[in-house]
Each structure stands twice: as C-alpha cells, then as structure tokens.
Length: 437
Image 1 (tube, rainbow, N blue to C red):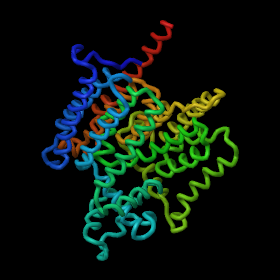
Image 2 (cartoon, rainbow, N blue to C red; image 1 turned 90 degrees about the vertical axis):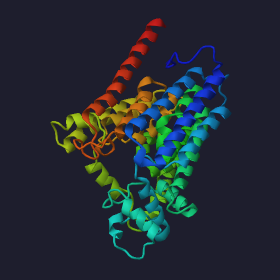
Image 3 (cartoon, helix red, strand yellow; image 1 turned 30 degrees about the horizontal axis):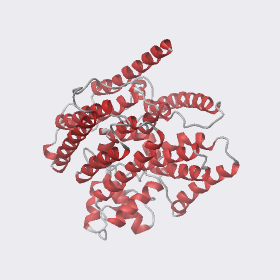
C-alpha cells in the first residue's frame, strides 16, 4: 500500500528531508516535555498541535525513506533521541504510574503486590512518607492491582533501582521499545518500521507516560519471531511470559502452540505456573482486579457503546464475545491451512478485539502496531492517530457539561469514523490492484 504523501520539495535531498523531519520532531517533543513539567500551562489544543507537528514530520520522513536514505543506525538514533526526550518529561494526562510504583514498593516489602487493595493501607503509620504520597495518588484504590506477574517484576526492578521514581520506569520501557524496533527491523521493511519508531502514540504512551504494555507486546513479537525461526522452546517460554504481562497475549497463544508436540504445551503451562505459583501460594493474583475491570469498566468503546443503548452490559458482552470467537476461529482455521508456519494477522485479530472491547485505552494500540508494521494498512495507522482523541475527556476539556472521564459523542464518532473511512479506502485500493493484476 502506498501511503506516501506529496510533501516537501523535490529539490531537497531525501536524506536531508529525513533528518530535517527528525529535527522537527525532536523540537516538538522537547516542547511537549517542557509542558509536561509545567502541566498547568498545557492545554489539549497545544498537546494536539505538537503531536500533529510530529505526525506531519513523520509522514514527510516516511515519504522519503528507503534502504538508501535511511539506515537502521540512523533510524535507531532518531528513535532513541525521541524516547530520551520523553524520559526527561513527565507522564501526560495519566496517573497510572503511581500504581506501578506502589506495586513495586509492596512487592519489595511483602514479597507480593497481590492480595490487598491499596485502600487497605490508608491510615497506616509505618509507611514511609514518600510511599504514602504514592498511595494517596493511586487511582481506584479499592481495586486490587490488575497487572500480571511479568509486569510486576519490572515494577520491582524499578523500585530497586530508584524507588518511587517514575523516570526509571520510563527508561526501562523505552529500552524495551528500542528492542522492539530492533526485532521489527528483522521482520519488516525499514520504511514501515520508521512509522512505528517515530509514532507519536508510541513515544507518548511509552517514553512519556511509562505504560508497560510494550513489555508484553515485545515478548509476544519475540515469541512469534522465534516460532517462525523454529526456536520452539524459546518461543513457547516467551509467549508464556507475554501472557504473564497481560491477558491480551492469549490471543496469540493458539497460533504459537498449534501443531507442536505435547511437551511444548506442558512447557507453556509450567512457565505460567512458575510465574503465578508463588503469588497464588501467598494468597493473591491479578485475577481479582481483572474481574472488577471486566465487570465494571467502560471507556472509549465503539460497538459496545452503540449496543448499550438497547441492551444491558451482560447481554452486549455475550453477543460481542460470541461474534468475536466465531471470527477468531475462522481466522485461525485459515491460518492453519498453510503448510509453512507464518506470523498470524495480529492486526486483524487485535483490531477486531478493540472494536468490540468495552475499554479502549490509547496504549492498547501498542499491541496492534507491530502487526501494522508487518501488514501495512491505512486503517491501522489511522487508528494509532485517532485513538489519541480519547484524551479529550471532561477533566482535560475543562468542561462543566462533560463528566470528568467522559468523551463527547462527536469525538467518538470522529475517532472511529476516520478508521472506518480508512478501512473502506483499503478495500477500494485492494480491489483496484486486483483489477490491475
């Protein structure tokens, strides 16, 4: 698919255009980092203006990028530059990191982050002041942590390296993201890797905001890569670690394990038991929090929101879940018809999953975008841009007419409407190519 835009002067050497675009992005991210340190001055209009500047510069770079104008080293240098700038900033429009830091502290002190909701520690006098400051800012303190053991070990590591400091999480996840880019360079055309490496969504959600989904997504992609290279023990073990990071990874497990000998299925189970066993033995896991999340959370959804106008939540989830299972089974059956194993269409699977999900946070797209690099399509990259509109909630809009964490309907229509239009363009382009061939 040709997504190149007619941007920039044809008289400017492509390598200069690439570096010029990188410089513009670096300046815009630096300004954003400054605003993140002075959040009282940051408005949504400034935020979107800066990210739009980065997006435009990225598209210009993408237009001129090929194996001659951009080398892996140059791509990695610019990617590292953007992420380093993000690390020097503070999380934007997010407070989830307080939970990560609190979990790291509890893991270190008690040997497990599970078993007790943060609110159960309110009023305890023996908690040091800096950790009590974290506790006071944890969102939904009555809900036990929803993060899997793989992620909890990263929270523990951050606590050991620099307790109660968000920057160490930013560094850890930015480094993980750089590892993801290295892996994608082995799997896909460098032009499409550039779109991921320069993606405003990725840089904002990982380097600035320290969301840990990149850990699970990177492990998932490594498992798929190893499966493709027939490194089966590593593939199965790493896939289990990915599931231990977030349940999203379960969507890829059948593709990794199918047609493997029984011993590999046992290995997968054993790795999961090794992850969860010590915590379950101490009386807790992430399941308690996940059940609350699945039962009660609703944010930035599309089809789910529409059906909720007529049906109760349980019925909607049953209908959408059943439909997803049917489509998933069809995709799995089609994938297994080929004689040689190949990486599955995770873009379609995760795209459908997010389409029906009751909760679609912007950082969930981190699970989709690696597949968008491997299977380029206009709709997936459009989604990576429009999902950032989900930060237009009442509290950020300073609107008395919109609830704190509610997104205006017109924003939802714009966000998903653009994705639908992009999908239709993809179908049209596919049909045109079919006619031409």
